[in-house]
Image 1 (cartoon, rainbow, N blue to C red):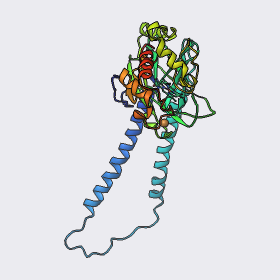
Image 2: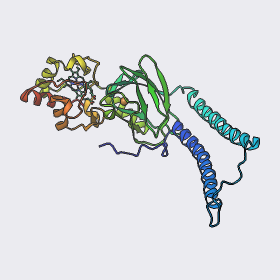
Image 3: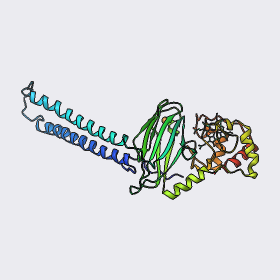
Image 4: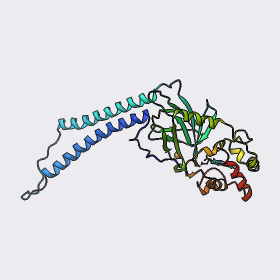
Length: 319
Ligand SMILES: [Cu+2]
């Protein structure tokens, strides 16, 4: 199973996330200062002006219209807002105007109800829900630039340890980048409510050392195995509607409505993180996806007993 790291903005692992943490420390320092001043004055007033024995119960003298005090409480907050605005703008520009390095990896991520399609156009790879990228060692940087598109409604792409949230909007292409410095698996989640399975739209980013990433790429580029012993299952797969929605490279299956299944078993989870990818769960999924992910946009395929066994036996060979 995926090692679950706390998806915290306070544990950054990539330049945009470091910038965001820096900025949040500044904001936290300013708001803490305001809190201490306001709370301090309040406590002082409560103690200093509390009712004492012998008070006659009448109001103290009232003071009206101090220009100085009014100027102070208008200008000070105004200046604070200006400082926050300018600093935030500077950080946003620094992140967004970063030029794409010549050796950057290009990935396109398409938000779908309720899963992520992940394409590597230059490498000829298509996968889902589990993004794999190389580590970007500061001594030898290799950032990943991500193009974000939506197939249906608004989603939002967020891996707190790697970068800020970027919305995924139908009809609009957004860009972002990450340069993760430490290998590992980072957890993210769709961050814009997109329908019943919004919470079942997880995302992981696995950051590999250089050589390991090259191995992953080679494995993904390889054709799907075509083993004679699972021919019967392959025939079930290609004879029902699976092929209209799913692609398995090298077979007649070339649908694009659902995730590419060419290397299905290389993924740790099914249905964008709702279940581990075990043969048992796979069988349950193919029989009725709603048993694991109610509302999923894959219909229950009504493949019966023996055929289902053959079909699953075939699917588990898609490594
Ligand atoms: Cu969502």
